[in-house]
Length: 344
Image (tube, rainbow, N blue to C red; front, side, top):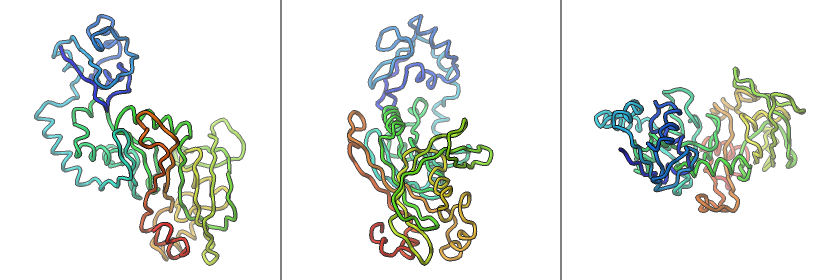
């Protein structure tokens, strides 16, 4: 027999999902059969698997150690755990230092630098998820054992070369409630960028985005299409530099689709400077010579939260901002000097 007490981080997920993580090599049918026979019970009562786990819930497994181990064979024994700890310690040296903007029991918000992936694309990649995980392990908020049934994750993603605010979940409940909030578009997200051309007035624009997954590129069309997603973007010009024919923009992302801001502005004739995928190649070449700019200038600058309760109550009506990268600030200082004091 084995008893498992659910921690705050694990609470919020379904019982059957939890069991699938705890014994990853067991078929789902095994869990349901054991629950029917009361060999797996929740808080001493018969369970169905659909129950949402709460902190301090007790799962009792009336199973032999051999059976549990057989279905846990990807988990580590003590010697392997120690080896893994040493590997993680060595790996931490490769992980960029985390820049925390906000933290509570359920949520962590960081300022992502240019060049860091939000989530790993390949097994050897280091991303924001690895960065958050390493931080939580080091601070002892999370243990290696807990990683078997819960893993930190991000609630929003930014392109590799887009910097700024990323929201991470430290608990299942935090992830679930924040993901729902973002899905309902209840969080206002603002970006700063510099585009080629003169934008005169604030405007809200809509369209439809089609993604080419093979090329990892999108295009914008004006009318609905079978494979197109509706998008909505709002922008406000902060300053125009006539000498460079560039506009400093504050962009409100209303829908959040892949490459939305860059492609939407390009479709209007205002490409983001430094953008190698959707930008003006001749202008980018000049910017590389003048400012050593090697990537697009797009920064997730600010988030504003609505009135909240529950596990997100500490974020209620908060407005958070992320410091602009030095390279971005340098160009603002030289091209839009009158606005530099607002962001330095």
